[in-house]
Image (tube, rainbow, N blue to C red; front, side, top):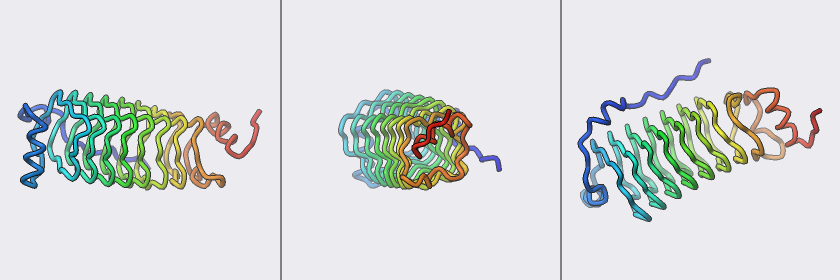
Length: 221
């Protein structure tokens, strides 16, 4: 059955949003007044180690922003675009993402553990060593991106589309991969349980299957 693509907000609509000159001040005000950051376009903002936990973002666009090591634990994002942003080492634990697009972003070491991701796309992005442990994913597309060394243990993955994704050295321990098509992606050196139960029903090429046979101690000639 063909997988449905995520239904995301139109980029033209997000481009028309009013430009926010001081995102840090806006975030602080929204936290104080317990209201969402909504209908704003943030460009070139730089935050390091800021506490943005629990904030809600709706109908917003972030372009060329650098949020380094920021805490966004429990934050929610609906109809949000991240374009050309650096989110490295940010913590999104227990977050909620719905109709969110990451385009040409960097998120090295970012933490998405125990988060819920629905109708999300990741395109031309670098998420090396990102942590998705315990995440619940439904309706996600990942394209031309690197998740090498990423941790995706004990995840629920439903309706996930993959194209040219580098999973070299990634961990899928206790994450069922049935139905996922890895034929256009890289699976070298992945980590699974000793019984290889995670790989049952996964779609791979003959070449990939030969490489995965090494997990069972087999030598394919």
